[in-house]
Image (cartoon, rainbow, N blue to C red; front, side, top):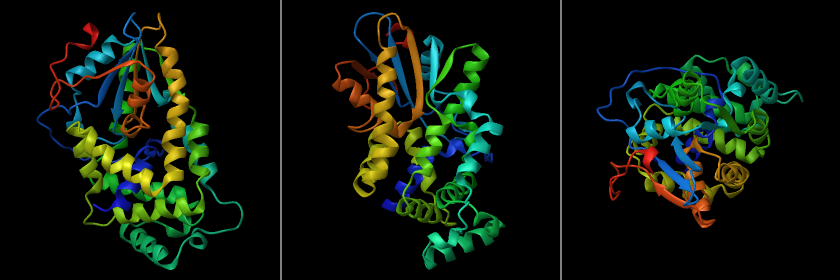
Length: 319
């Protein structure tokens, strides 16, 4: 798996649930995934925040979740996501996404690309039976996301089965309050604000991911299933920060900083318990929410009884 492809995967993996595509291929898993789950608290009082690292595209065999995750959900008074469920409505979100992605200055997609990338995109469109003339009317970042989504769904990963969507449905059934850490408008602005160089990199990475012999999304999915936070950190956070520092700062660091303020409010006495479900990248590394909260003096402990080196954990409600 190349460095470029790993970065490209995670760039659009953190945002792919904004796109309204899905494809389901059944898979069977013997055991629930080991959770990327941490509990954060002040050390006194009942206020606590559970941080759950999501993979935005999953398979039927990735459910049910681990008992620790189910306990955290049951014990939480509210559930928070990157976007509130109401902002995920297809009619609203899809229209806003297409409006931002549509070219209106007379330019064409091929005007943004070098000859080699354009040929690769032509080959991809031909193989997938896509209308490249219609794609030419969209901005490069949107085409990159679309190519990436097609690649992941071909590998059996389904955005409609992502951990975020799963807990949105669970929260609705349980009548738990839900909220978002940011707005759909800010998510779309982040994409539409990418420099042309960043957009080209995104598309080139997606096309590499889409090669028939590629299994890169599956590799990251498998690391997520194993609860391997260290491997995911190396494959995503560290390499993206080294090679795409500006994009990394806008996509990860700046957003984490904004979310941190809300998390700290939920950690005040009397706030009860909150389950926060966000892309796993946002939890990992020195810039991740886990270490940034630990640096502020909060008690932070991973909740994963099956993880190597982890002591047995009591149920979430007992912690």
